[in-house]
Image (cartoon, rainbow, N blue to C red; front, side, top):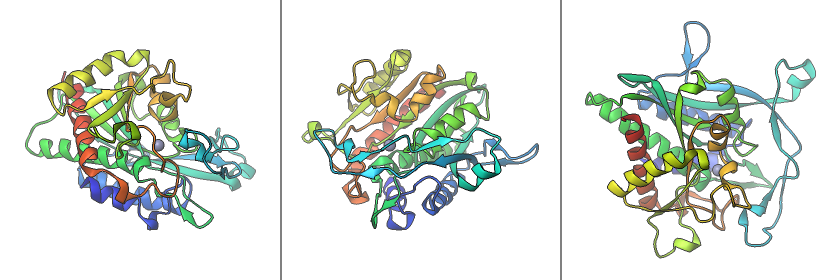
Amino acid sequence: MLRKHVYTLASDSLLGRKTGTIGQHKAVAYCTYAIRTCHLFAPFPIDSTRLSHRQTFPITIKPIATYGPPSGLHSDRAYVPTEKQAELVNRPMSRRDSSRALFGINVGGVIPGTDLKREIIVLSAHYDHLGASGGRIFHGADDNASGTAAVLGVAAVFDSLAQLGIRSRRTVLFMLFSGEEDGLLGSAYFINHSPVDPRRILYNLNADMIGRVDAAHRNAPDYCYVITDSNGNGLKQIVETVNAQTVGLQLNQGGYDAVDDPDNHFQRSDQYNFALAGIPALLFSNGEHSDYHRPTDTAKKIRYDVLQKRATLLFQVAWALANP
Ligand SMILES: [Zn+2]
């Protein structure tokens, strides 16, 4: 199932899933289908009687970034935005603005809890990527078809348990964000237009790039970076305990933790917007590799055995948090 999700999302026909493009719409169609297959409820109000799995938000795209050669050890420099690429449009838009406006689309679904259903855990991943440029498609298999697949996989397990009458005490909201590559726009919009009071969101678990093995772990691939800030220390302890009792991955920070990380990894994916809202949030990631933000980040390079273990850890942590 994880393999199918990654191969579909990272296929040529989805054109790199760039926010505001036809590739985004194809990805939304697939993600919505997958979420409905898991019988998740729609969380976003359309009007007073109808709900949607989709949350649409307006953005303005600024001039395209350049794709230059990598410089130095940090392969992420292969993709160098010349300026902040996009921004949320502040409503109301003028007529002139609306002619330039594009739309991001978050996709989400809910499994309601039982006796603690007013308390919410958000499991998230961004599904968008860099699109296509100069005839090359940026497939984004690791970034972040892998995390998207894992969130959908965890939703499927929660659904299977619910079919057996086993439901979590707290509510779990599964979110697939758009606009991440343009500056964490989808999660920013979600926090500011949450379908529930953000104070009821207790934790955010975010998966961004969990399908590869970095150079430091070539001979020990059963690992995962778990990255948080000082507000997430309690959450991190829960992750460590659950991991020790279940999957037993090697968990480490790899110098990626927020306080002393010169590349600010904690601030570079959607968990950061939850942290800014005061919600304990944690990033699961495999770290960087030479295909990062390059057209060569393809589905066949994913380590599906390792992705499966990390997705299992994500489920086990989500289940523990949802059943205090
Ligand atoms: Zn990413």
